Image (cartoon, rainbow, N blue to C red):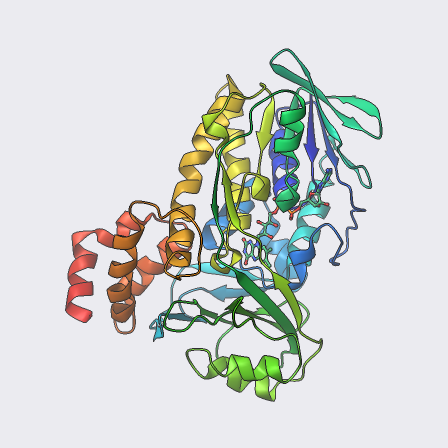
Length: 423
Ligand SMILES: Cc1cc2nc3c(=O)[nH]c(=O)nc-3n(C[C@H](O)[C@H](O)[C@H](O)COP(=O)(O)OP(=O)(O)OC[C@H]3O[C@@H](n4cnc5c(N)ncnc54)[C@H](O)[C@@H]3O)c2cc1C
């Protein structure tokens, strides 16, 4: 039995690791060369920008690839306490810091991928074929039997589309005569701009700054201490006032953030790079659970659902997809395709609602509002106020933001009482 994975990035690597337990052979195909070193590459243009790994993603990856955290730390990732070491600004409210067991891991996207690829490459029945783009799928009746590469056929019993935002799956399925899956799409018009600075011991009493953009201040940041003694500073803004890509203007833009800490830090730190800007595409959720599909087709990571990255959910959802695949295979793998997409629909729902609910607060955002989102947003404004003083409410918020708990956890009577008392 052979599983073939199109795309050897985060989603593809995690799927490969899981599938190696159930398939005699796993082949990972990528159109890029796949260096083992922590370097930027063409197929992952987002890698220059901050990539926060949510606590749920961190835990799930460790479960799927044991030793991941230790290897990341050995190669320079920064360990942090998500409650005590990070400045979280929500609607201008600074969440009160407190020691916790919410452990995070800060590193650049290239290091995360490099560590995963190095560890996954050690699994005996996984092979990588770099510089090998997948051109299409091959089916026999309603079952996939392989993929097309370089005009040749590679037999497969299972095919995972992990081609990221370039998202080849729908085209391949249409070529086989399947209807396109409906898509939910939200266009938030987000820009990122990122600059690296030298990090020297004692230059800050925090390891990260996360400031969400909201209508009262549409500028945000995801900043973290990173491997290589660097600060990776990503500024977030909307397309009518995008974060600048010019040195100097970049720092001045940061002065408009809620909270003075980041501006103070970067106006004194030594820049290591010029800023680089990135236009974020729409958030798209492909509803494969609603259409007929050939058995043996799986989509994971950004090719299944890509989010506004400001909420840091993409890698975590890729990890949850791999975990779900493993659980289904452990239970016998019956009707794998149908059951996989049905299960992923549930796993994606919370993350999707949380991210598009905030995006849809901006008049310029185009998309459909989930039913629960208006209520959630107005309650959250009160909750953020409470987090300035109440570490129990703050902790619960962090659990939800890190996908360790679902939003109803914020509506438990004990939390609602604290919110009412403190807001
Ligand atoms: C600016 C930005 C910032 C982000 N920040 C965060 C963050 O803070 N936290 C977080 O969790 N997520 C973040 N994300 C999302 C995160 O990058 C992705 O969710 C994550 O990398 C998983 O992606 P993937 O493996 O599905 O696809 P990708 O990483 O995009 O990789 C797709 C792979 O498919 C290959 N490929 C494409 N077409 C073919 C083909 N035809 N045949 C073979 N191979 C092919 C490509 O070469 C590439 O290797 C961010 C995204 C962006 C754009």
